[in-house]
Image (cartoon, rainbow, N blue to C red; front, side):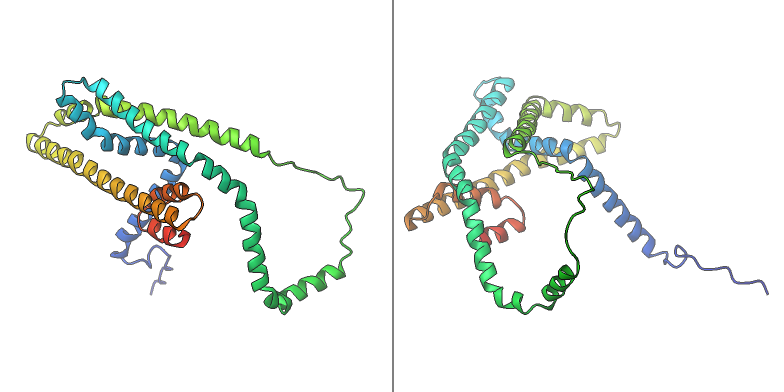
Length: 269
């Protein structure tokens, strides 16, 4: 009798499980590629969503005999003005909150330390670490050179982050304007290149449904979140809590995050 060949890890996988494993590997690879290309994908996806949200405004201006390029410019200007006005309104409260943040963190840290003080005194791990520290002299070797690495200052980090943010914002605004002016024409040309007439009509119907439903969804979500932010700001103003506009803007932005946003908002409030 011939000896039985050894069984490998690949042979131990059942044929029914192989497609599932392949799909899992594809999902992991796609997520890794998306994470690597996030610097490129985030502005494009954000610009596409903003263009879909502003598309009804451009169509309404088009019905008023305003050219598409001018309507897109007006819609983009109104959107940027609204966002800029909101940021200007919450700038002073945000600066005040950031100034008070170290004191708030210190108070929270003190509360945590006071709460866990008894546990820390009776913790055997701390006693072991203390004993090991006492066994060693803990004195550095004077003959060994010391290397001191100075971290970048807050101004340097803020300047670097601000430069990157301004670059991404400018690229996103250009992409939004491009999608608003030429997006419909590019989509129509892509569909017209399809040789299948039935598939062409189906693709056109799907594209029109997407263009009709996504702006409605985004507009509905935006109105709900803005209403929530106004309600939070009004409630905090009535209760006498400081910086009600900042809390309202934070509630509006956080609630855009699916599933996790309401949970984080409930923790913050």
